[in-house]
Image (cartoon, rainbow, N blue to C red; front, side, top):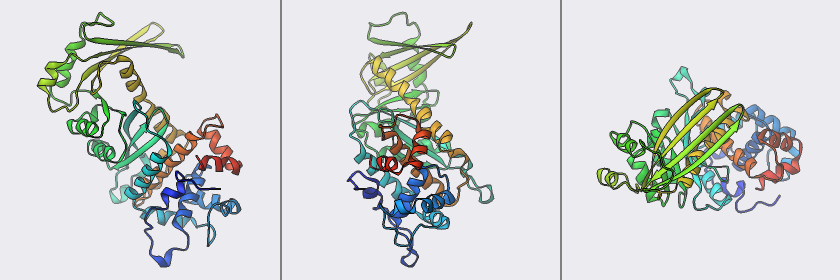
Length: 373
């Protein structure tokens, strides 16, 4: 199999090997590629990687050197415990950027997920919390940063923004990430933002809310409007999206919010039988008044929950993983992101992740197709 410039091998062979020379029985890139192949085919731990490697040894020899055969499960464990996660993540991001061409207007939701069983009470270690950037159009993980607690997302998000390409993209973040320094960082990297508002920014929410209190219009007076209706499973959900760019007072009163151009509101009405409920959510935007684009951004934000976090839990059983020592949980999370990106970019077999993984396990030609994405 020919390795292209955007291939895994090209990018991940740049990772610094944490082992001393006398312990390098197996090449680091071989260990990484076997681990990726094993996870594609259903492995979720070190023993599974060794089992897969031994079962597919002859095929693996066609794409890897394997000077001393297949590594043991202890070798996989020791390497990923010691591998530097930040460097590993940078290789991942370089690979992603080579994999696809960034497009203007793409929505980049950012959100965190706790790997629940990565904690270790015996040594006082909390479960790790991975903050990820997701490209909803391309169905790709763009990058990730680890924190020890969910509350630390505020400090993790700027680090993540530093290492991914935001140019022309629209970053969406929930209310926890609605911070002045985060808005400024996004603008400095030539991106736009749609930030959810709650009561964590002083009077800002109070000052935005009145703009939308007496809405009886759809368009006009500086407002733009868009509406969607979704039906299914016995419910009807109607969403009204308003944006307004005539906000000179806010711009004057809150000059520290870099790039602020408009505000938005989503009014969601949910009907199930004879029960009806309504919810309103407010946002600040660095984009002009465009309700259609605002709707696309806010609706795409939830794709990180449905198409990333849910898939990692259901298809990859991430929340059940008991791997918790040293750097291993974070590195394994990065490997899962690699595998999910590979599976999502393979378009010829139009099935979900579980079916693609099953076919890859049984069909080496199809696995090669996934790896050559």
